[in-house]
Length: 249
Image 1 (cartoon, one colour):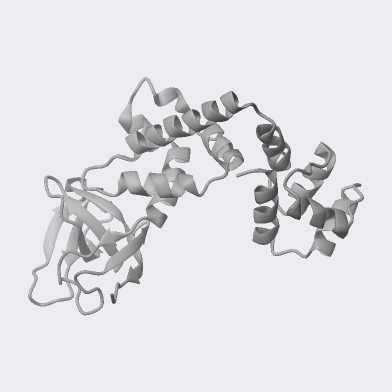
Image 2 (image 1 turned 120 degrees about the vertical axis):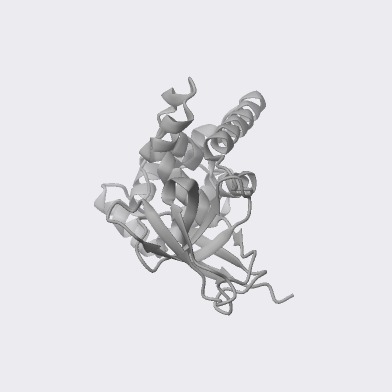
């Protein structure tokens, strides 16, 4: 992604008109005409001053250095461009290592999809927000890092988990897929999980049996399946069901 594409993306995401962006830039002490803004949006080789780039970013509600950074990235040599691509691959590999959990077969695809949607400046911001000192390497410490947890939540929100049985039919039919959210779970939530030593994805309604949320009864909706009681330490809960997706093809 180059400066022009990032500029257009930021403006589109802001939902602001050209006149409103110019007005906000003036509030920052920067004179910007709608005509010049249109030129920047449509002529890939045009680059404004750093002051204008910062003002536009602020007007769009983004970090003020994003456009400035992208302009500098665009000016790099081919060698540095290749180095940046290699760095992206390394960060992607690290993310895949961090996110590996038993039974979560889609982690690689989820990481690739998430990172492919990040501009270079977004990737830099994401990487800079994480403390990589855990790479000595302690998996549990990495999982406990709040920045890693936030990244995991974003990755999970883009992932699709298969419905592998009819236990929740007809509401959640076998063959469909669901999106999940990583959150604090409550009684009555529909949870996607797997059991230790079992790669099958299960979806059941949770009823926690103690105040410490150590024991949980997983309840099917289909009477052909039985409820089961688990110690939560014996489960890996992927998340709370947020969306059902059915392929009618």
